[in-house]
Amino acid sequence: MAGDEDRYLVVRGRRWRREDPALPTDVAARLRSHLGRGRSGVRQARRSDDDPAPHRERVDLAKRGLGERGTPWWEQSAEQRRQRWETALRSLDALPGDPNG
Image (cartoon, rainbow, N blue to C red; front, side, top):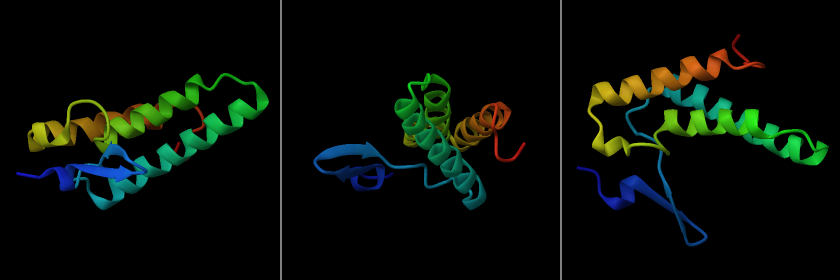
């Protein structure tokens, strides 16, 4: 079983959940790409007084797919983990402005 050091990362005194180590490399890269695009979109929306909600949705879906939000990945079966990231990618790929679509 994973210990706290495998589950969490501490940055400037704040504890953050690590991404699921069972993610296939290509899946993790796609989810991180969506996460970066979402974060960039939130920053741009703030500067231009646009609604950041669609970009925050992308961030949330990506973080859930990575296992950083929602049910902790260490409490999920291998099948539940796979379903989590597949569901997140389907949702992310369906969003407007998808880089893969």
